[in-house]
Length: 329
Image (cartoon, rainbow, N blue to C red; front, side, top):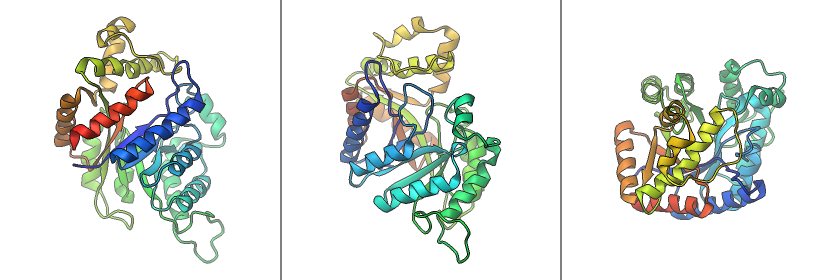
């Protein structure tokens, strides 16, 4: 079995708040560690009421400090929002506190709207600076050289596993050129997945960090006792996508009465758009999930899978990850 990991968007559900979200995040991370998941990643978003992982490095420290062996990281840090030196210092600090457990996934998108992106890094020109920023960041993790004017303290000479994240060919090309692991955001933007994977595997150049290409794909997976109940739980994620595309992001909504109720919640065009965005999804009872994951892995041949489940009820969310791991062992 290939390694499975967890992507947590730190959801803030209707009727709750960020404090409870952070408690749930740590509880889920501990469950993931107990169940045998390899990594626990948190994704940077800003100005989104339903996602509480804006201060990503801080939350990674919270999770790493409350667990003992699972790898914890960013999936990812949106580098256009930050100076590379600050990222190196933050993750160098985390790697000193939790040696051998910290991952740093880097994304090119701002993870927010234009107004918030401007507020985050006012002097930044555009995301086309991303490759240069990645190279600068990588250099800060190399051992410091004599006469080096600026160094990351801590950070220099410290091992932090780095990934390039992407949903297009841009990230695939960069990861291949730099010899870094590549994680594709197939859980919400699957259109270019097959072409991006083929490009990355074909053009990969070995580096001191990585000898051969290494791909992780993200997959929406919701497991429950029955196919119908899992599909109902999944309507939370579907509603959230519709709301976002309508320009009304909010707190994470409770599931609808049934999966069929989505047809009344949104227009056929909206439903088609959401179905396309969330096409990489395995939803159902354990047997359905086992077969769906096996088919996805056989088709795309990832080296790892990162699972995400935006389920409203925390207990049901934890149980979903438990059912998944139990059914694939």
